[in-house]
Length: 398
Length: 93
Image 1 (cartoon, chains in turn cyan, green):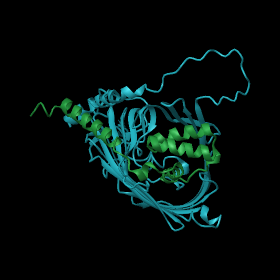
Image 2 (image 1 turned 180 degrees about the horizontal axis):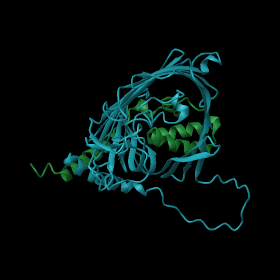
Image 3 (image 1 turned 135 degrees about the vertical axis):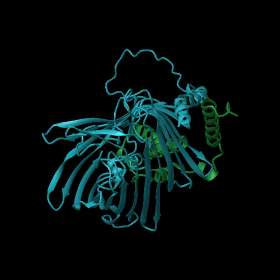
Image 4 (image 1 turned 90 degrees about the vertical axis):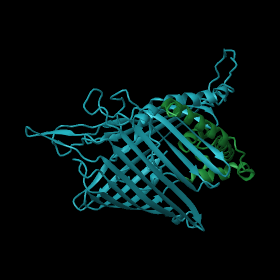
């Protein structure tokens, strides 16, 4: 473990060496010649300019029907301004707005990521970005790509693995013979251990907070992803990813040296057979948190407990779309099924037995990216069967 | 032996191996069939990895430039793929 800690501290050296290896190419095409100032301003100039922008985003609404209630879930609006400033600089951003019960909007900065392309196989970036952590968050993170009206349990914000990161990273993709390789490395603030001494029912002690914007100690998490598309037509992608944080507790606290290590793998496969496009996807991830003895105070009584802090999540899904059908209505339909399972630590206050989820979906595509989903969700939470839900989601991407 | 196993040494070794591997692999000669793939084919193959293929007419040329750059990072497209796909989308726009 000490070795890993020391390795982590040396991580910046890797990034530095990557920079040095490519810096000779970094400035080769950015030289600009100063133009004389224009004295006449032409309105509606035909000059297209050198920067490229796209203001994109998506809006969705949800309707849930269960045995006990039917309800519309407030609208979500995601705005994603993208700016290609020049050949090397690119800005990716995303702001999420959710309508609250009182009619107000809650704003959240989902992404603010500044990219610098060093050469054809290396890009550096810094900011707030989604963890390159499995296809649920990475490839299928945007609603219009997800194909299911609700996410798989244990693999997004409710799980035990990284979701959002604040830090910097390096990434790239390149052809290697018939295969294509991709990689991502990052150094980020990392997860923070949740410690709550109140003996309340929602006590999350021992769980990690993955969405904190500022760090709680000097330690940083490092991680990355390696992927391969072995076939020349890109129909299969397989990734492996990992993250290690040597210290996750608040600096100076009893728990400051609690470590967290996570790893996983995913795959995505698609192929068209005659008129039918078949897609299969899956992901597995596991997180191990260092053991600790936690204090709980309930009704003035103090007790101590510890548990094996290890959990995992996985899912498998498949979709069928008759995209080659000559019937306009039929070729815009897609059906899907997904099974997901989340195994939290058995003896944690927030743990227990596995939660399981089966989601069935029928999607109708209005356009290439706007859709309406009719879903049926069957879920058991810690062995207790929750009420089945019928879900309608409408999502427009623009 | 102890000196060799120092974290600093291991880190430098890993860095050198990683950089060398990436550099060698990225400079591997791309097979002719792959190098000759037209933008339309790359557009169909790569977009479909995650989502339906967008029609070229939905965005302007400048917007396709921004989309192409976004996909370079989002989908780890190679330099050649971005160039060819964006050129195709602009020509078919």
